Length: 480
Image 1 (cartoon, rainbow, N blue to C red):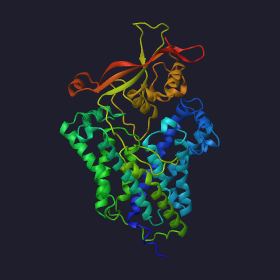
Image 2: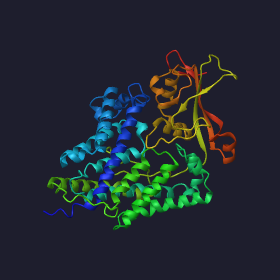
Image 3: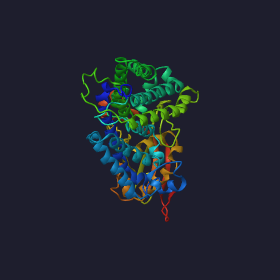
Image 4: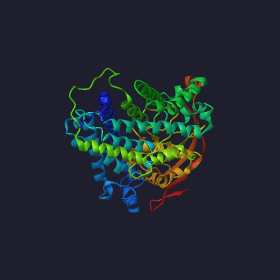
């Protein structure tokens, strides 16, 4: 049986680079889980997994944690994910037979699916589903000593197409500033977690912001179709995706979304055009492997009905999974852009009596803006989950849900796990007597203001998110 139809060996180096990059992003995702799960999801966390498991069955949210949950078991799952991801980066899968390679790549997908499906609002981000869908397809790419399965390459391009085209459509259908090319007058300042260069991007001339917006439309609405064109056009299209996503990496912090999009563009690059040829002897894929790849391709084709219907429909959903395995999802970003930036600033005091002279001290978080004199940090591709939810909270109190009262209670209690999510605890682990959260309006300083004061932000209080409160005798926060 000839396998010429099944393999595209000119993409041998592209497959290898894609696998290394994806494994590295898996590693970051599992490290994020290791470092943050206890205060967010642990048995004493803000949204404890055991309470979630009591409400939701396995069918609705497949996860290993339905078999057993403890903080120690969650840590073991996340650490195993770190170890396996590191092994994949090191190329261990390429030393195995085809079946062993597929099984090893399946391990991080199963583990991360188990985490996402119990992660609740902390894991309700589009890039979680994107990592899972990409990771599922990567299972079937095979080791370096076999030919590159053409069908899997096409499935990865189909995923990249839906990601980019969906994001472009949601912009054109959403906020009119995208159609007027003015959204980037505001975006660099109001995005969830600005980066160290965001101040400079914000102060680019307005004509450059309009060029940015127009280039974004071309990159997301035109270029995705070219990914399916013959070479070298497909490689050029992939290069455009890589460059535009690199621009986003420089201008802000979007967890691993941009890095994963760049990773997805790599399989479209023709290795021969890059000057890299595959090894002379690549093993013939087993028949069962070919049959499995065909079955997966057919499954993706069937599941594609729902995202295609969503793309063509008027009420386009953004970042939505149509099944509990997060396969063949719909994607999108910034269908609307906020014009003003607001931040929730949490403050405490150790004074027994509250009055006009009370000294309030501010909690600083690792990524979100706080101290106006602190330069925004580069945190992506790492994901600071509480920082992101606090940005959503600044848009509407409904995003606080059940976790905000729990956060207030734990800060008043001096909870040591919550301290791990902070950049600075003004009370060094001691419980404050009172706590409050205020809403501030933030804007970037002008170049003149920055030269004069050294500040990156100008802020002023505009409202209250949590009224001044203290812990009652039973351990519940009560307003004073």
